[in-house]
Each structure stands twice: as C-alpha cells, then as structure tokens.
Length: 485
Image 1 (tube, helix red, strand yellow):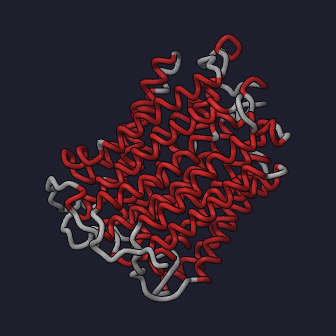
Image 2 (image 1 turned 60 degrees about the horizontal axis):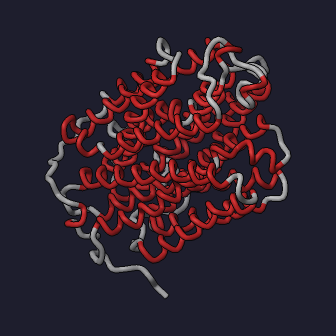
Image 3 (image 1 turned 90 degrees about the horizontal axis):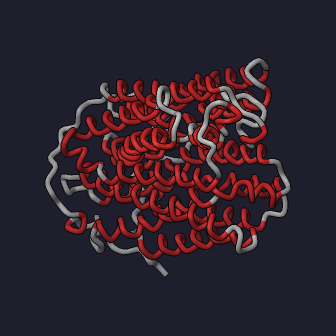
C-alpha cells in the first residue's frame, strides 16, 4: 500500500509536526542513557572507564554513515533514507536492550549512531518542500529551530525518565524503552511524511565511499590510539598521517567525478566551506567538552582543591540547565536572524559559545558560576545546532541539499572525535575520564579544555565572517500557511 501523499497535500506545519516526533526520539536517545552509564557498566560487568568505548564507537559509525546516507537521500529521496536510518537505529536499540555481552552491546550501541543523519535529512525535506515559496531560508530556519527545541526537550525528558526508573525496574526493561520510542517513530515517518523522489542524477560513488571510509577509519583510529597509548606512541601518528595522505587521491577522484560522494567542488565554494569548517570547530565544544564538564563537577574540592563536589543527581541538573538554554538558543534563532541577519545570528552564536567557555577560566569555583557559564554557552550552541544545517542547505543546489546538511553533522562529529582525544590527553590522570573518585586530573587540564573550546569558537566566528551575506526578505509568514510541494 502506497502511503505517500501528493505534493501540496499537507502544510509545512503538519510536516514539521511529524518531524518533531523524530527529533523527540533523537532526544530520548541522546539524553536517556547519560544518567545510567554506571548502571549499564554494572549490568555488563565492565569498569566505568570502559564506557568511553561507547562514545568512540558511536562517533566513528556516525562519521562514516552520514556521507553515503546523505548522498543516497539526494538520489532516491530523503524520506526513504530517513526510514532506512530509523530502521537501523530501531534494530540497534533493541540490540542494546538485549545484548548478552559487552562486545554485542558495543556493536549495537555503535549502530545507534545512524540517528545522527536524522536532523540533516529533516532539514533537507523541509528545504525542498518550501521550494517556490520565495522564503526557503526563513522557513527552513524557523522549522529547524522548532525541531532542535523538541530535540532538547526530549533530552531532558529522557534523562529524567531513566533516572527515575533505574531503581524500580530491570535493566533490560529500562533499556527497551528507547527501542519502543524509535520503533514508534518509524511508523510515524512511514505514514506522516510525504515521499518525493530524489533530485540528484548519476550513480552511487563507490570509489569515493571507499576512499573517504579509509580516511575516516585511519584518522579516527589514530585518535582512538592516542587515547589508548598516549601522544608519545608512534602508531597513532602513523595512522593519522596515513588517513590524511588518503585525502590526496580522494580529492582527485571526487573532483573528477560528475556525481561524487563528497562534492569537494561544492564544499570549496564561499557559501559552504565556512559553514562546514564552523561545524568542525563547533563539534570541539558541543561533543568534546561534556565528559570534562561532568568530571569537573563530580570532583571533590576538599581532595583536589577544585571542583563542585556534586553527586550524580546534581550533575544531571547541570546538564538539564545546559540543555534548556540550548533549546532557548534554537527557538530564538528566527528572532536573532531577523535582528542580525542569518550570518550575524551564526556569528553571535559562536561568540556566545566562546564567552561561555572563556568565563570558565577565571570563574569555576562555585555552582552559580558554572551554571552561568553553561547557560551562555548553551544559548550559543542551540543557535548553531539549528542554523548550521539550514545555512548549508541554503547555499547548496537543490540536488545536493541532503549532502550539504549531512556534512555539517559529519564534520561536527569529526571535530568532536578530535577534541575527545585531545581532551583525554589534557586530563590524563588515574580515573579522570572514568570514575572521578579514583583520581583527579590537574586543574590545568580543565583550563586547557575550556581554553580550546573558547578559542575554537572565536575561530568559528571569524570563519563565518568570510561567508557571503545572504540577501533574503523575512516576511512574517506562519508555517501552516505554506503548502508542501
């Protein structure tokens, strides 16, 4: 039975409403597990430090899956690929719930990383559905703000839910709840989103996929090796150098193809490279700084001379505050873009991230100071999360919107993986990234983390100033007044 609807059958607000459900599922996946990582470690019979493998494995899969899925979306249709990625995520979520060992859990957890392509695909769907309206950029930013707001709300709901249920039910039942949510999301996508064919032409670029996969595996494998063996080992640097060397033939192959996996010519344009480089720099703080912030808060100041001495419940509160302000930054993006322009909104977001983390350098001695710093960084981060995919879509041709939006998540993920390894080195100490009680990193390590986050955000703001200023009218048009198609 064909459940797709003809173009124009649904208003944009209805489509965004269905996509909000997808982002609610994404938020559950991103927030639900954080408060119960120690309980998951006990369930699997592993040390707390081994939980860091979850992050490394999922970041690797996320970085690898985005380029081919984004290209596939442009070829066969974004809804189809959204369904495929959601189906993989649902199966992986059930695997997480019923995994009998650490190894099978790790594989299932890594495959959950397919959800990272959801938001870029949703933005591509919205951008295409508003074609011909004359207001694609405005409506896409508004819609993206709504989606990111729903995402962050679900992060909070997920974290609170798992924390409340962990003592009252079995781990299998607890871990099955996200799988139920994602499975329901699969049905929502099937019946609620219009199916439209892809606009891209040409075939699937298998040589490009092979080369970019090899490059990412080598570079991210080297980053993981840095974490395991330390910066003094030769192997990590050989792997990273080999991965970078693969980029030379990769660039030649992709530049010569009419239908490349990674459109290097598009990425080199003035409208794209500042956005993609900003996504990489933004990934340093939004993905790389969360574990250091958590361990800093857990550190006992009576023992280490710094830290907040917080328990796990209060760390969840800190994360919740950060997420609330991240949602504020996303939801106020349309207003910010109206006041400052699309490029000005991006620059302002990056500068807020820089200010928030920069304030940690002199002000980190109390809970109030930490909350203020995280709130400022959260507002800026929310604006960037919502604006980057929409900006990339606006600067791409119609047949490459999925690729452009997907690359913002891919480059952000690589930035986060890079930062994760660098921060692990900065915080090197017994137990600093695993169980805070087993040992403390030097305060200088945390100062290094915050300084890198701040400097990278300033660099992102400078890069964004090189992006051409878009010329666009901003009429006050409600979402439900715009037809689909």
